[in-house]
Image (tube, rainbow, N blue to C red):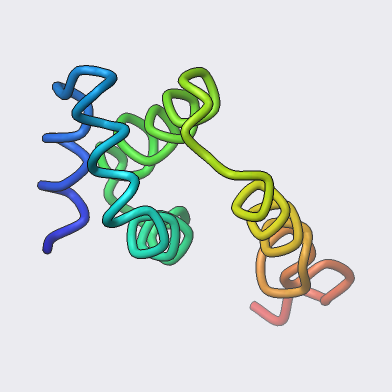
Length: 90
């Protein structure tokens, strides 16, 4: 599956279609969204990934375990705190 095409399709799904999709592909989807959240592709990053996070939260499509995983990942050393405190060498 291609993340950009998947998110474009997801945005047009009904709530019941989203629920069915998430039952089968939620872990993959979250992993791909996190892997591409810093993409230089503005459409993917701003219009698809960010919007899908809003939709997932608004529609209550994430389990408490998934929410915890997202929180821990986003606030981890490889995301929110990446390069904090480093001096610019360029």
